[in-house]
Length: 164
Image 1 (cartoon, one colour):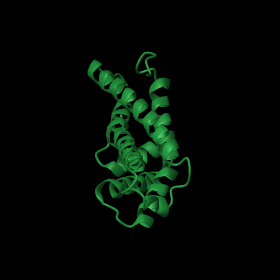
Image 2 (spheres, one colour):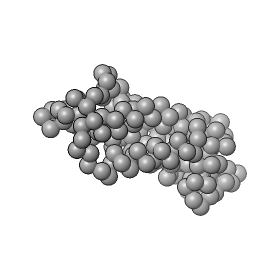
Image 3 (cartoon, helix red, strand yellow):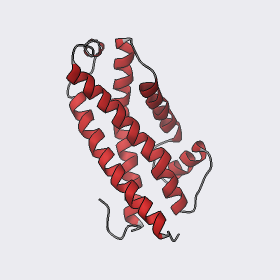
């Protein structure tokens, strides 16, 4: 499919954003989970501002990458291949068929986790630790989805060799 200049500019912007968000999430994930994140560690957040900032950064970066991939890059890619879909579930089903995501069900579970981490203030240290551990376990899924979507852009050479 032919993309007009505005579509290409938007795609180039999204590729840059995803590359940065991908890098940032990976780095934060490695720092926060260098050691297991336990309920005991979660209980220290009020006293340990550095740890609290790392947790906040992880949640924000996890959320941003998931949001950018699912709500911005995915619709742009689907439009570029002539597969525009109205609902999120439809978009995810096509993305799964195209091999860009592992499964639409897993993506929805990640989205639900993201919403929970962002929108609910979790006071129980065990619940918080479990949510963060689950997020950590899903980071690779997000990074792989980002890699596959970015590979699609490269393989179709939509950006003329510019993939930063």
